[in-house]
Amino acid sequence: MKGISKTDLMLLGMLIREPMHGYELVDQLGGPYMSVWVKMGRASVYYALNRLARAGFVSRHSERHGGKPERTVYSITDEGRREFFTEVEVALGELPESMQSFDIALYYSDRLEPSVATSRILARLTSLQQALSLLERTLEDARVSGDASLVLVLDRRRALLDAEIRHVTALLQASSAGTLTAVPAGAPDPQYECPLYETLRNVVAARRSGVLWGFADDRKVGFQFEEGTLTGLVSVPGVKTDVALRETFAATDRRFAFSHVEVPDDQVEKVDGHMAVILRGCRLVPPEAARSQIPMEVGAVLDTRPGYEYETVGIDLTEDERRVLAEIDGVRTLRDLLRQLGSDSHSLLLTLYPLWAIGWIVRSDEKKRRLVTAIANCLRLFAESVEVIAGEKTVTLIYEDVSFAAAEATLPDFWHPSDRRSVASRFAGSQETVENQAKNYVSLVVRSAKSRLGEAFVSEILDSVAQRISDSDGMLLTELDILPEKAAGKGALP
Image 1 (cartoon, one colour):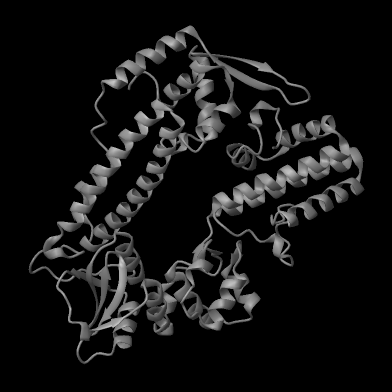
Image 2 (cartoon, rainbow, N blue to C red; image 1 turned 180 degrees about the vertical axis):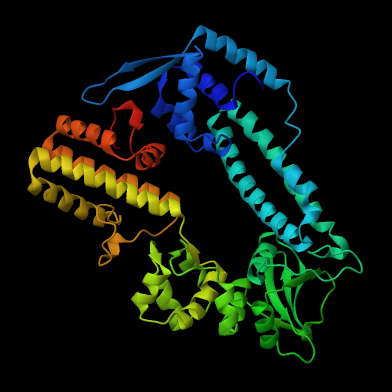
């Protein structure tokens, strides 16, 4: 498709049905059906609409309903209709693009350590399987709703994903001698940086059966899998299992091989899943090795992965591990945690390492921090404007209203996010969770302000905030639909 971009074509098709304003287009594109196969951010939509308007493919006009701010409504022109149908006819007969990034990576994969390439392909298989599961659920919903056009698209994408999964699975199975590393005969054992715990999680995700052998110096230990479930540890004559675990988890030059040869039952120690084994192995790691294993600087932002508490069933966490998990609740740096727990970095790292390895503690996305800061700056500007119009007491009353409602809805305090004394000032959960919390919190602020000042006053205040907020904060909040585009000069918070 060479005439216009995919984004342009998608928007023209939506506007053929009816004129729409930008928010409606963004909202529909982000809906549960469309977001499975269309990836288009708010900024991209508005940029494309402006481009289409300059090309004469869409027209635009402003309209206002009641006391709400003006919105720009976009309509397709006759020239836009002609361009749309021409491009659709051409695209239906086109072949897919020949050069794709995965093909390029596959072509050069022999430049990587074989085990590293295999580890990444295992991760790709996991992502493909998750995408297929989501798509199949959406496809079933589309069939039930009778959306025949959507069924056509999703059914094609399902077939492509299914074929890709079969191909990637074949790649893994074709590794020489059934190994994960596919090392040519006579070649030296590979040495690389992929941690043992990451390799175990990849084997689980790929639902493999067999024994993964981990080597460290002259030690080795086997991990017996049955369709992705870790069922046992394979002992080696003359070496205690815990000694072998300690050496393999502590090693920086890790070597692995996957075998399908059956192991006698008397050589297998039964275990209850991979998480318990990772915790056990990492607890045995010597202090010096643990310090070099965990990739975390003192200022790193920590977060507790949502849902970890449901995965602790049957796993005997130590008292220190439970204490650390209880203290990490969102935006919390390692330095803060050291201060909070009153512990030296040496002993704290030994406690963090197993929890990090199991995936219960992760680095927070920096975007989450930026969002919290942007919301706080937005609310600060909002409060300043309210104070000018109605006085400081009104600001206090609004904050009290919002604090009570936020506590009822278990929302964190976005107004004063740096207040570490309150549990409500912590921001736990995924990026998406915090984004939804931010939108809900701002909605509470706007609702309280309208009840005390009236809709007209609040609309003026919001217009002022939209114009005064910094470009970086405005861009982030615009993308999340919390603020309108700054250049528009009009708009409101949700």
